[in-house]
Amino acid sequence: MNEKEILEKCKTIAVVGCSTDPKKPANYVPGYLKEQGYRIIPVNPFADEILGEKVYKSLEEVPDKIDTVLVFRPGEETPDVVKKAVEVGAKAVWLQEGIKNDEAEHLAEEAGLGFVMDRCMLKVHKGE
Image 1 (cartoon, rainbow, N blue to C red):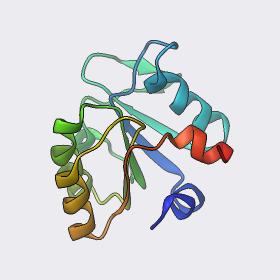
Image 2 (cartoon, rainbow, N blue to C red; image 1 turned 30 degrees about the horizontal axis):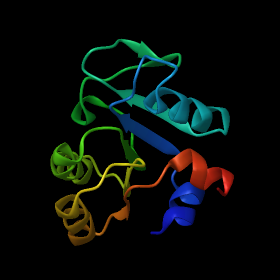
Image 3 (cartoon, rainbow, N blue to C red; image 1 turned 45 degrees about the vertical axis):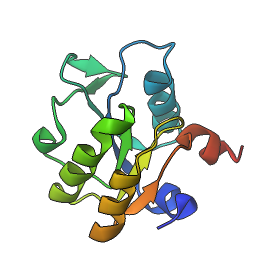
Image 4 (cartoon, rainbow, N blue to C red; image 1 turned 45 degrees about the horizontal axis):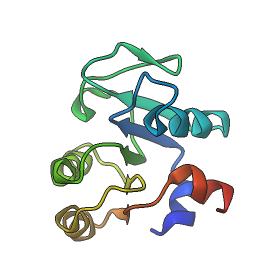
C-alpha cells in the first residue's frame, strides 16, 4: 500500500507519540487529519485527552480497529512500534518526516503492511 492508498483507504489512525503541545507537529498534524475526517486515536502514556480524544497509554490498549499507525517517536523506537502494529492488526505504519529506520521498514514489509518513512502525512495529504 503506497501513500495515496493509505490516505484513501485507512480512516482510523492511531498516533503514537501524539503531543499535547499545539506547536508541535505531533499535535497539529493529527489535528489537521481529524479536521479532514480521519478518526484520530492518540497514544501517549502521559496524557488523558488530546485533540478532544481519549488517549491510550499504548497501542495494545486501543479497543477499536486501527487502520494506520502514525509514528512521532525516535527512529530507534520504531521497530517495536511496527511489531505492536502487526499485533493489533493495523494495515499500515507511517513514520513522520524526519523519522527513519530500516529495521522498521523491513519488519513492516515482512508482515505485509503498507509503510511510509520520513514523510509528513499532512504535507502528503495536501499534495505538497
